[in-house]
Length: 369
Image (spheres, rainbow, N blue to C red):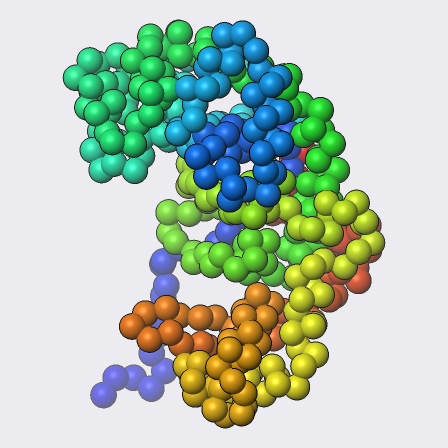
């Protein structure tokens, strides 16, 4: 038997709080607009509708129009530039960011673009740097990938300086076409970002991500040193997730209440949360799940409701962040226990005035507009 009071000297690294940055910027919204354009084949999935695509198509002319047409099918090409914008700090305006792109090494820029667009293939990582530098064999292997569109192939085959010139020209044209509409959306994006910074006073990074994205879970991993949250109008109702230099970047859909230009309106997720709690049947379901995971049939029988009605109530509880659903061989529901104390924290965050929120916000939460 060992000593009753063993001594321990722990030399492992202390756990560090993950950094969180909340940023609203026209630069990010422009890159996400090009991402949405590149996914035009599924345009119906975006709330911006056909008007967005028609506006962009009508207002980009000349050589840039042909370049833009070639970008359909390669929306992910533009996402790595969000990481470049974050790292450079050039997010105050598209003009400054374009100047930064013009100052980049052409080969390095090609490496960023090709790496982002071709990252889904296991062998692409090995070929990215070589293709960016002009290696013909690496280029042929990349353009042979089944998801490489005609426009992306054209950029991969181009000389590095030509790639940069074409990217700068297209970014300039898109900024001219969308700049006014993006500027109109910025106040809503900034209101949303301000709210998330206030929430960061009481929520850790995973919970803040889950709240901002309306349900996307995030588990801390050793290789992730920070989280960047970016509100966006153009990608609604989607969330777009990328990684950049140890950061996990979440571009999430700006909340309804901020688009309605009513800064005093309570957040929709807060309203949904308390509406979900304001029903006796749903409270009974939460009590059942507090005992352990359960399937739809079991819950329906215990609350004496039809399966369809029970499913409706469970969906409300899940949307409010109070219930998780696990899909496997059999679908089961479980109580999201952390969502219960969150109800009080979220209400407190809303009741906190913007000035108080700014004064009490942790220093790890950064602002870049």
